[in-house]
Image 1 (spheres, rainbow, N blue to C red):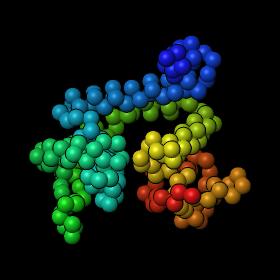
Image 2 (cartoon, rainbow, N blue to C red; image 1 turned 135 degrees about the vertical axis):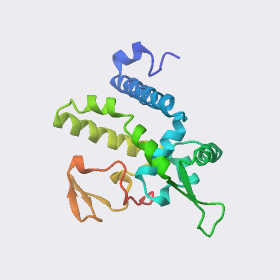
Image 3 (cartoon, rainbow, N blue to C red; image 1 turned 135 degrees about the horizontal axis):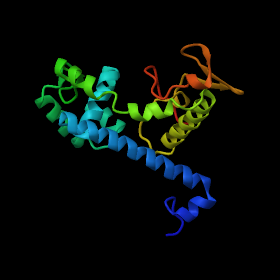
Image 4 (tube, rainbow, N blue to C red; image 1 turned 30 degrees about the vertical axis):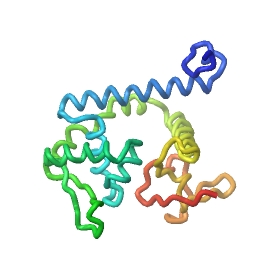
Length: 203
């Protein structure tokens, strides 16, 4: 029981525990900021997250199966959210696929209008991040991108689209390289959510 990340005594002797506890605090910030928007527009957090995701991602990722993986929830949970968004006329279902059980989801005009009110819910957090120096930002980003990749490889995160997990990514000694763009990548050019991402096979 004493060996817990959230035990202050353990944090004093283990910096990894301090970092994990700190990440938990940051995750609370997202919840707070998201809930503020739910009060504004009358939607649940998952409904808002789905709308924002649809607004900025390709149609092939905007379906019930992928959204369930993206947000680590069940397909019925996503389906229920989609039903409400459809009833509120915030989305459009594209059922032109040969599989009638599968459909792509896009924003309606009303959905686009609502997105303009909520897409920037994380701005207060970004404002604080912007205050760090460029070297601090690059160091923090490098650590976060590696952490996300490792969590995905260990099965904790079901979805990630970072360069490190992409079939086009290659490491040549200390140089990061993208075979799709055919260019070396600076540390700050590593992507966390790449539109061209294709998962590399697990070796």
